[in-house]
Amino acid sequence: MTMPEAQPLEGRPLNAEPLAVDPPVLRVANLAKSYDLPTSLLSRIARRGDKATLRALDGVELQLNRGEILALVGESGSGKSTLAKILVGSTAATAGEIEYHGAPMPARRGKDDSRRIQMVFQDPYSSLNPRLTVGAMLRELLVLHSIVPAKQVREESKRLLNLVGLEEDALDAYPSQFSGGQRQRIAIARALAVRPDILIADEPVSALDVSVQATVLDLFATLRRDLGLSILFVAHNLAVVQHLSDRVAVMYLGRIVEVAETAELFRNPRHPYTRALIDSIPRMSAGSVTEAFQLEGEPPSPFDVPSGCRFNPRCPYAVDACRTTDPVLETVAPAHLSACIRASELTELAVARV
Ligand SMILES: Nc1ncnc2c1ncn2[C@@H]1O[C@H](COP(=O)(O)OP(=O)(O)O)[C@@H](O)[C@H]1O
Ligand SMILES: [Mg+2]
Image: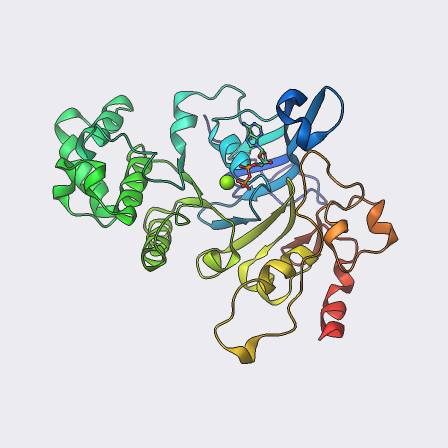
């Protein structure tokens, strides 16, 4: 893919939009993914028609900026992995646009576009080939993508292990010989081997012991700093990303409902769902516990997305308009977007409850 040329300043109308000096590395608009499933399989879940449509993603708006760590957070089933798979190109969207460095991503990606967006999965046990040594696995990739000349492959492999904090002797070992945290480091080295500029990490620490989670989180921070990677870090738990991410995007039932810088999001959540996620984080000291905001109602079903605001059946702040108006993601403060028609009142509502 070629990068867009810089536009000349002359001849631009004075009221033109500011020049996008650095377009987002990835941007999606109106992204949708639905699955049509026969009711024979799912009649008990859907209970209607001869086909049930599951809306895994439904109008996703999101951008990943160059060199940032953006967290994508939401409860299980909200569509995070589906979005991750569409971004790396392993699943096709049903509708919507994807831009890569400001230009439309081709529906069929070339080898180079695929190389530049790499994924790290939750489960390092099943994502590594048990029959290949770490060295053989890295060699295969380095050769296939012509990353370095053949005689430099071993040196390059050592450099990759170094990057992820592993010793060189790991090259001759098999995945089964490593701990969970080390395997995740190997999976990260594999993703880095082809020199991506974007890393999509789908719950990369969720399967790890709590004691090693922090060290792997640190690795992501180091890689962003040293390699300038742009990282989309998927998590189901806000606490995991609080100290890692620059920004947080909150997903609910197939849509992004709030985006803000991390500190701002924690300090000043402007969507009731985000507030519920923050309140569900266990606090260390009893003194810091405010009245917990309880999520009401059943977890949502993507077969039957509520009309109006999709969160309204569980929202303690819902008013009549919330049952009819489907809110769009709008700016509520600088660099802070929320899809709630009561976003501007939420600060007062939160205070009033305490
Ligand atoms: N291949 C598939 N076929 C049918 N439904 C799917 C498929 N993949 C995901 N889904 C459904 O899409 C919804 C979102 O799933 P997913 O993206 O995995 O959510 P998350 O990663 O946030 O837990 C879920 O209801 C899930 O059951
Ligand atoms: Mg998932």
